[in-house]
Length: 106
Image (cartoon, rainbow, N blue to C red; front, side):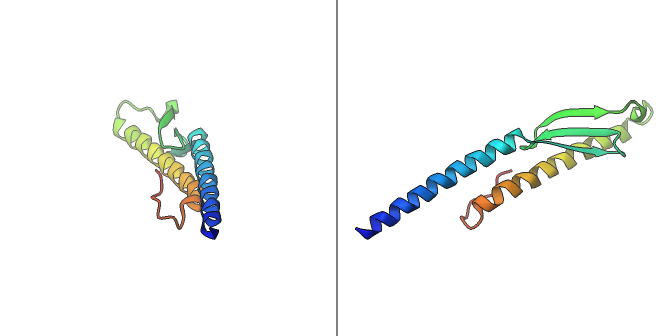
């Protein structure tokens, strides 16, 4: 019967881990991450899950003769913001999933 007590502890730990994971995922969903390119001329804002929710482009960088440069700046800002969001997400979830064989969430 001693094994049943151990199983109860395991279940409590599993419940606590589940609650901690849910809390971390909610915090990640609420995060907003910004990154810029071109010396701040283009700024992208993404959620903690990497969804683009904002994009600011300064007038000075809009050159009808050089749309390719603007496109590159937008892509760079969005990609950097998404990478930052992913890193923050891994930072929050890493300690909870480490050693459990669970995949990291994007």
